[in-house]
Amino acid sequence: MTAENVVKCSVNTCSYWKDMRCHAPSIEVSSKVMPAKTSAETECTTFKPK
Ligand code: SF4
Image 1 (cartoon, protein in one colour):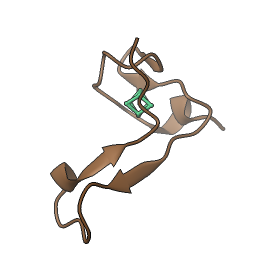
Image 2 (cartoon, rainbow, N blue to C red):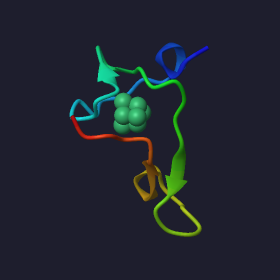
Image 3 (cartoon, rainbow, N blue to C red):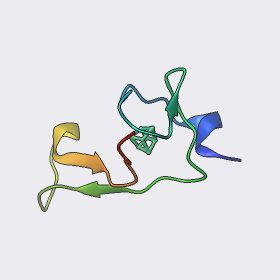
């Protein structure tokens, strides 16, 4: 299974993004601050600019 099957994403400036889904083999999500308390305090560290 790849991220394409399970990860919806709206970051259309990422090179893995296509058709509102992530096409990376896998992704890593990290906290921007510790401890993260909202989704805004997390981020996809697999993001790669186009
Ligand atoms: S790598 Fe992260 S930002 Fe890029 S398409 Fe996948 S989930 Fe979205």
